Amino acid sequence: MCGIVGIFNHSIRRDVDPRLLAAMRDTMTHRGPDDSGIYITPDRSIGFAHRRLSIIDLSDAARQPMCDDSRKIWVTFNGEIYNYRELRHDLEQQGVHFRTQSDTEVLIYLYKKYGEDMVRHLRGMFAFAILDENERTLFLVRDRIGVKPLYYYNHGGSFAFASEIKALLATGGLNRKVHPEAFYHYLSFLTTPAPQTLFEGILKLPAGHRMMVDSSGNIHVEQWWSPLSTKQRQLPEETYIRDIRDLLKESIRYRMVSDVPFGVFLSGGIDSSTNVALMAGMMDRPVQTFSIGFKNEPQYNEFHFARQVADRFGADHHEIRIDMGDLLDFLPQLIYHQDEPIADPVCIPVYYVAKLAKHNHVTVCQVGEGSDELFCGYPHWSYVLSLERLRRRYAVFPKPLRQVAAFFASQIEDASSAKREFIRRASNDEPFFWGGAEAFYEAHKRSILHPDLQHKLNGANSVSVIRTYFKEFLAGTDNPDPLTWMTFIDLKLRLPELLLMRVDKMTMATAVEARVPFLDHKLVEYVMAIPQDRKVPGLQPKYLLKKAVRGLIPDEIIDRRKQGFGVPIVEWFQQELGNQIRQKLLDFSSMHPYLHQESVSRLLSSHSGPLPWYLYNFALWHQAWIEQEKVS
Image (cartoon, rainbow, N blue to C red; front, top):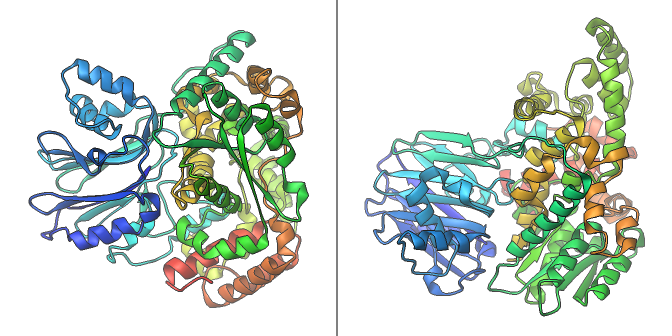
């Protein structure tokens, strides 16, 4: 796991400055504290740089940037290719001679053999760039699910890319401005949808996409993978159960490929417990497990279940408790490592549990992200599916009649009302489900935005983001049932840009690599091809997964009520954290034309759950990255 960066001066006569390239690279030392490297082409128009966290082939021979024997094909790579040994064997059979034992070198020779289609052979998590000096082109790729980030800009005759936005800002060539539309969408999704970021002029490559930059700086971006690549099929239930268990075993076996110690973040739920159980069955030593909880907030802790699983499988178990003071201490680092706000408070415990792993000399950990999305584990999904049935009945009424209903709904004073928003969507034939992490509804956003910003947005609506994904969904499936749509939109938006980014940025802040076995693309494709009525008969959450792991993990873990990985933000809001949030948001809204101060004041005085936290994240981000003032 690493940090990558590059500059391509394609249309200006300017040498790549090695000092600037090194400065960009070293903003990401936390991603790769073990080693670093730089390569600049002989004509000095292109430069690659790399920070290394050594995971596979710890020798100096595996340093990056890395090249082929001709020194014409170069790669800088962040991630892991889990099937690199099979790929290496096939290439050796064709006469390729390898100089290292690394997965990085495999990428070079796959590219030489298959060109852009090399990506279809890869099983792993990755973001990389390949330079072909003969053609003077750059080829950049982000993995299928979006486990690894990749940011870029193309401005003033120069193209640059990096694993983190802060590396791009280090060039000094960008005006730090907020992208208004991206901020508007952030208020809905708690993150910015790809390809936008909150910075004007900086973009991110969407998950499952690749990019070619030619010698003139022309950019061609295309999607190379979709979670709907396999058509839905009806199979016997016992076949689904057997195949899911086998695919999980295979996925976890692949994610145990490492030359450094590895472990599991263990919550005591089905997902992390399954990781421990399957890993323990493949090891001749105890699994290292790590759990986190909260001081004085026992309702959020799952230590009892985590300890039960650790004892059952003989794990070497470690725990840590944090409190509001730890959050306040970490806030400046949180804003620094996020680059753009990821308004999910779970970032804080993820950081501290990764720090616990690193303290115990573990560099690689498996996590449970993706299971709830694939196997329908969220309690609210059953409720939304019930509402979807009502929406379909409502849709048969003439549109003028529905518009009348929407008008009367709009008279509901509470702009945060879910009833008001859902009637609006149903009346306008909008997709009903916008994702599992929706914060402010459309009317609520407009009520809190500053009039100047509303004028700039000119009637923007976040449904434009959802419609793009919905169109892709309808074109890619032969059975567009509501449950498959719900999984699809979370795979396209919430997972890659929110959940996986919180894991990537918080674990890499401690130089720990997180691996995601439930999001192996073979498993994703298989589960996405299971029809709704077979995946969750009777709307039973995680029906097939529970069947698949029954007998692997304790029944008490399978049958327990889902708790979820929560953070006591609402409780802490009643304490010092609330005082800081109130003062910051009132000051921020008075000084900057983003939020309407009176509306913010009303929000702060109401029982609005975590909504103030989302605005607070943006205000702190603006202070650190736009105003460039220290966050304390």
